Length: 335
Ligand code: GLV
Image: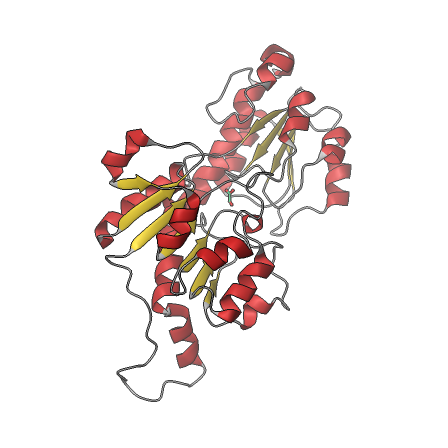
């Protein structure tokens, strides 16, 4: 009998093709995420779940999946999954590290440039009929990017990819991570600094950390007040690593100059969020990895990881390796 896989929402065809080869798919071909009620119902009899970061896979969902062997998420972040609990239940978790690194780094730069040089504000001004003179000496002044100090908080794959791009802008690059990466400092031309020093010194700060209990609200009022008044904060990681209320105060009161945000405390961003009425913030709807090429690779990588587990093989995108000791692959194998 073929394994049953629940695919919670529309994904690029590359992923579906791989799953179809080996599994019976229950495919919800819809743009919106699956509701919790539907997920609790649909997961009951499947062997594998293919989800996205918009579906919370908590204890309740995991317990409802009586036959569940593997959860594949089409994301590099796994904060929407209770991984510890899944592991304790012998459920394998696969994700999509690496394939979205460069695309996400490109996008962090897009936000940085847009916020520094007021690209979106300029677009809004023209569309609103507010462009009155062809050129004016003091119109829409922004901040130079080249030659400035870039602070990278979180120096994993994406943080490093952001650093590589800074070379072309002749920037001084500082980084902070819980693990100092002396091996990379010379190669990438970056300097390690404790986080507080980065906050004080950097003109641009970009966050590339996973959301964990330790990183939740890492950037709050204290940190924002330490930053330069001319500093610009970029976030393409998870909204909850910033205290969003404090950030709104910082942007309103001028503790910092601007921000570029792809992720938020609550997504979609509520339409009455004060962020929407602030000119000095560029807002995008969690699309940092959203290129045709990368989303296709992500869909494929999550699917191939899921299939490997069901074949009794260890894929390189297995997130919870400890699970191998709890439930051997021979118990999970179905293909
Ligand atoms: C996107 O935010 C991801 O985690 O892949």
